[in-house]
Image 1 (cartoon, helix red, strand yellow):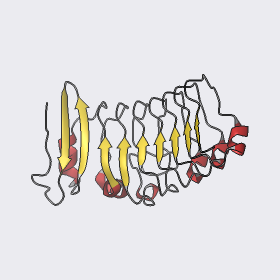
Image 2: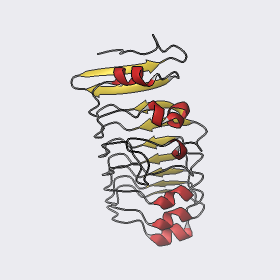
Image 3: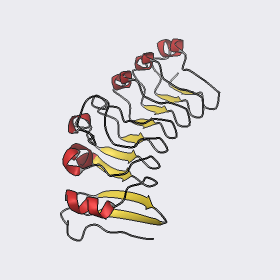
Length: 209
C-alpha cells in the first residue's frame, strides 16, 4: 500500500502499529480528525512524501518528522500550533501549509534568535515553492536579514489574515530583490505585493484594494 486516507474518522491518535507496518506509504491523509499529537514512530514511514494533517487539534509537531527525508508536502492547516519546527533535514520539502494556526511570531523552539526563521533551518531546501502562514497571529513579517535562505528559496509566501501593520515598510527596510508574492489582508483592504528582481525602487507596491 502506498496511499492511505483516514480523514474524517474521529481519530484521537495515530496507531503506532500502523507506522510499523506501512513503511512503503507515500501519502497519508489524516485530515479532519481529533489528533492532539503525533507519535515519534511516524518517522518509520520513511517513504512518506505527502502528509495531510489539516483540521485537527495539534499543538506541536514531533522532531521525528525530520527523519521523513522524502517529504515534499506538509499540510497542518487549522490546528493549534504556536511555533514552527525546524525543517533542516527535509531537503525535498517544498510546500508548507500552516494557515489557520496560532503562530504569533516566526521563531523556532531550539534557542535561535527571536523572530528569526534561522538560515540553517532552510539551507537544505533546493527550492521552497509555497509557504502559507495566512490567518495566524503574526504582527510582523520575517526580516530578510535574518531569513536570507528562506527568501532566496521561496517562490510564494502567504501572510494574509494576520495582524502585520505594514508590508510596504517591510519591503523597503529589507531591500528584497527577488520575485516573491505576498498576499496580505489588513483591516478592510486586500493588497498583493510583488517584488521584481533587481528593481528595488519600483519593484513593489499594492495591487487591488
